[in-house]
Image (cartoon, rainbow, N blue to C red; front, top):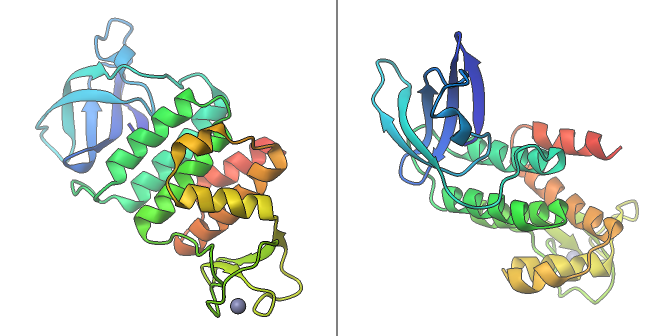
Length: 237
Ligand SMILES: [Zn+2]
């Protein structure tokens, strides 16, 4: 469930991310009435099993809905803000009624990880790396993104334009350096080792550096800025 919009007196229109049909718009009739059977299951960013009927216009009609058991994030402001990022990105890359390979699975996994993780930013950063990988924008972290020379074990500048870390010779002196600890975590994330990643100790500064790299890489490759990222930054001030 990516987005919801109140409609008419008691209806609500949802944008759903589906496994087989990509992004689908559907209307849930009478869902805002307290007596509605559909209402309790249709939570924003929730994972649901839904039966859709053909509507008269472009929208499908929600006939039946059941929540898929799992963690709930509704009501948790910080988790909802991170979930908004997952939803915004999924919505951006998906077209109407056409699945994009891997996006549904990534969104479902990322929402579940966000629910179970005690540190939501950790789950959110993992999602960013996975999304970059899926979209073909994974940052180059082992060798210099400009001259391909292997990077020594030291802090390095990150350039979203070049698509990765830069060696001393290719970096401009004015570019801020990514700490070595953050580079190591980024490499672990790129390897896809979620089990180890979950056990790492990530303090605020470290996770901030990791987010900085992943967010700048993502925003460089999208034509518009992500609204949910701007909101996450505001929340932290
Ligand atoms: Zn270089």
